[in-house]
Image (cartoon, rainbow over all chains, first blue to last red; front, side, top):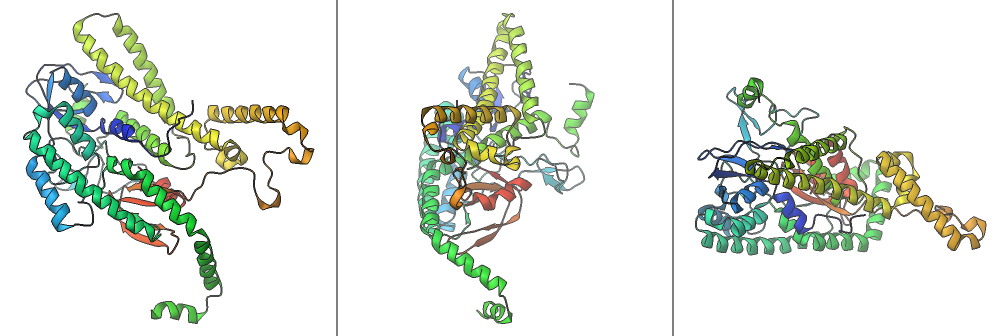
Amino acid sequence: MALPLPPGLVPTEVAFLCEMEMVTVVPRQRLESIPLLSGKTPALRPPHRAKLPLWLALLLKKQRRANIVAPPWLHSDSLKDIINYETNIDPVAFSPPPPPPMKSDGRGGARPYAQASSEMKPGDMILSPPFLPSCTQDAPSGYLPYHWLELSETLLAHAADDIPNAAEVRTLLRDLQEVRAAKMRGSTVQLEGGGGVLKLRGVGAMELAESRGFVLGVVEGVRKLGASAEASRREEEEERANGGGDEDSDEEMGF
Amino acid sequence: MDIDDILREVDPTFDSIPEDTRDLQALTRAWVAERSSPELLDWPIDGLFERINERIKQQIEKIEEMTGDMDPKTNFALIVIQTELERYKYLVRSYLRARIAKIDKHTLHYLSNPVIRARLSPPELAYATRHQALLHNHYLSSFLSSFPAPLQNLNDTAGNISMIDAPDLDTAVFIRLLGDTRVEGRGTDEDGAMDGKNGDIVILRWSDAKKLVDTGVAEIV
């Protein structure tokens, strides 16, 4: 009964999550709205585009009932820009994630997508991938969304004819994957320091799933090796804080 | 869909997340968090699972009604509905199984004090109690009974060493920030801190990440 999987999402679970991403489809047949648990699907009327979750879009694609519109970031020009950013502009960090989607608030301003106002109220739910529209045709180009690798692999496998320049896109994606895998490996150097917080802005879900075991193993190893040093450091700090006279604070200020 | 729904859809000032999407987001978030966190998290108190189970039940009834109808058009809709139902059921099942795995591993810890015990749902509490009772009885009948009485306990804390195995709360986790916030984490050589931005993925210890996740400015990934 109990789940035998290790903690942390495994790649198949990440792929499952990715199938909830919304994509834009161009229907080839009429299809009435279907009452699903996650809400009613939009009624499909060719040639009007509609947004559907990826799993449903793939089902329709397999039955030749619809074509999938590749998200703007999956075009070869956009991918080239991203590769350029990853290799030349910032060779250490990942390229930034897409900006949070905004929506007009009807009064000339903008507010975060699916949020009643620009101010956060307690109890407001913040949507996060895969529920943000980061793979539809309205997504910004030049930014890789959280599920970029899984989504592009899935589209290339099942809907390659819907992607412009599929062969080129495939090679570009492979380059991108290699550049970013090297960065992921490089980031583990920072883990050795045992600094407490490590930021991986812009990393993708599948990249995390791939290296989760390794990264967590390194962090755990460093923590266990340094456990006694950490304990004595904390004791020292506590002592300093308790016996804190003027000289201590001067010392800290001076250097 | 009536006229109010249509008006709501075009009204830009209206909070546009429908309840179904909110629940799916909440379920997905709970599942991912439970799969990745080192300890058992709170059972959602807002009746999320009651709502979802009720809706799954209704959907199954709808499928049963539709199966009688052999019209090819509803046939395809039926396939779609069933596929989605399986996806929902997978999420719920995987979530519950991940929780059972944690309860099985550290049963006594989760039963040991009322604060931690409150994290379990009533069926989980019943399961954990009964499971532990069976286990203890089995140990008693197979070997514990031949020990001297003071050594028969499974939850001894004598000599400052507790027999109750607890999950390691300093295990590192990955979190995603849902808003701009300051992130502080303890490290071996020095304590780190950084100003995190919306969308950042951060690795830090669960004991440091917990307060961010509890307040909702971060989620586990």
